[in-house]
Amino acid sequence: MAKAIRLVLLGAPGAGKGTQAKLLQERFAAPQISTGDILRKAVADQTQLGKQAADFMNRGVLVPDDVIIDMVGDRLAAEDCKQGFILDGFPRTIPQAESLDKLLTRIGLPLNCVLSVKVPHAEIVDRLSGRRTCKQCGALFHLKFDAPKTAGVCDKCGGALFQRDDDQEATIMKRLEVYETQTAPLASYYAKQGLLREVEGVGQIDEIRGRIYSALGDLVR
Ligand code: AMP
Image (tube, rainbow, N blue to C red; front, side, top):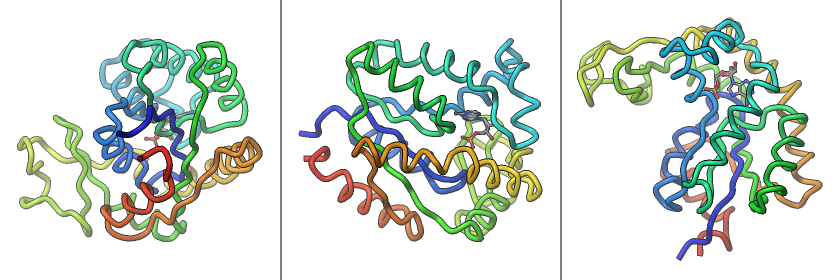
């Protein structure tokens, strides 16, 4: 029987956090909280939050901390997070991490693991520039590694596939630069708290999942 997991997934954009978070979500019956997904939905729905976030996202830079912290605070207050949660794409700055620590201490649900998925930048550019997303159901494909059966059409629902604006090469380079300067320092922040575990994120999805389960060790049993 797995223990409740309160996990942060760290890793550059395109490191495979989203894919692995979905697998962990099933394994631990704990919700995946992807700030990128929440923001993209807000942009598509043209909510106030979406209007605030869209321009930052299209430029490949971070949405301001106060906006993100409020958004995640609301999500973590939901009933389904009491049995654990998997944070994917949050925190991304030291102030976000500090706010998260305060919030989780206040509600008595501190993190029990931070998992860093490591992938070389050259591979990330390759992965992200080939990524295609279904407009209708959000399924992910890759022109090289996981091509749809019919070009431009989702295998799952028949919706049209598109390339996210922030998956264009110039924006990818910007996102990687932002990651190195603002997010990478979180690894030592969490290492100091004794929470950091690292895995290599190159290889087949199942292989990486296996490495993640080994790294989670005591939490999986
Ligand atoms: P992602 O899908 O996680 O790569 O996120 C896509 C975009 O959403 C990022 O490039 C940022 O503009 C924004 N975003 C997502 N999560 C955060 C966060 N924790 N802090 C600030 N901006 C974020």
